[in-house]
Amino acid sequence: MTKLEVLHRLRQAGGEYVSSAVLCEELHLSRNSVWKAVNRLREEGYPITAVTNRGYRLELDEVPDQLQKERILEKLTTRMLGRSLCILPTITSTNAYARPYADDPNKEGMVVLAEWQSAGRGKNGRRFESAEGGLYFSAILNPNRLMPALPKLRESVAHAVQNAIEIETGCVPVFAPPNELLVDGKKLCGILSEVRIESESERITSMIVGIGIYCNNRSFLEADGRVSLREIIGHPVDRNALAAQVLNQIEENILSIH
Image (tube, rainbow, N blue to C red; front, top):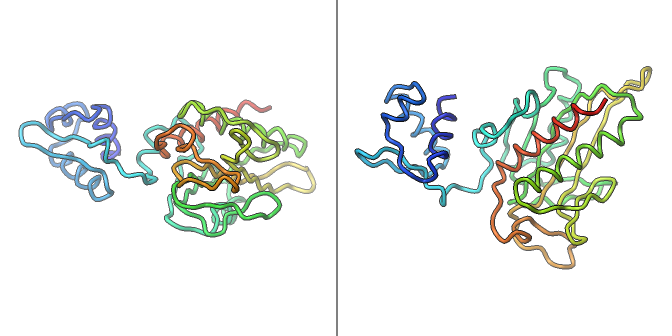
C-alpha cells in the first residue's frame, strides 16, 4: 500500500512538488519508506523528479500509456470485482486465461488484463482485433441467477461499459445487441460472455465477461468499420481510469439485478 499511497498523493498534487516531510506526515511514513516507494515507482516507469528542498513531482505529461495495477486500484470502488487483478503484456485471449479459474469460488471477481491479444475472439468465433493501445480484459462473475436472467445480465454489463465510457470521456456509444458498442455505426467495443450452468438447477454458476474497447489504438481504415476513443475525442484516453470505471459500473449494475 505504501507505493500506492505515495503515487496517489503525487497525482493529487497535479504536477507540483510535494516535500518529503509532507509525504511523511500525511501518509505516516518514514523518509526511508517514501524514498523506497519513489524508487519502486520509477522502476515501473513513473517519471518522478526529485529536487533538494522541494521534494518529489510526478511529471503528468510523461506518464507512460501502459496498464498499471496501482493506477487501476487507486480508482477502484468495488467490494469484490478487480480486487484480484493481473496484467499481462501478451496473451492469446483473456477469456481463455480466466476460464480455468471460473469454477473456483475463491476467484470470484478476478480480472485479467492484457496489452495485446494474439487470438482475441468475438461473436460466433470471429477474430477480435486486439492491437496495442486498446483495453482488453476478462472478469469472473458468479451471479448465481437462473438461466432466464442471462440476457439481462449481458445487457447490464453492456450498459455498465456504456456508462463508464461516458463518465471518463464524454463519448456516448450506442448499444448494438447482443454484444457491441458503436459510435456513428463504427465498432468501438465488443463484449463476449461465457457462462457455465448447473444442469439440475439451471443456475448460472459462473460467467466470464470479456471486454475489448478500442482506446488509443492507431487510426483504423474506414473500411474496417472500427473506431477508437482517441479518434473520437481527439486525445489519448487514460486506460487505467477507464478500466477501473468499467469494473465499478459492472459491479454496481450486477448487484442491482434481482
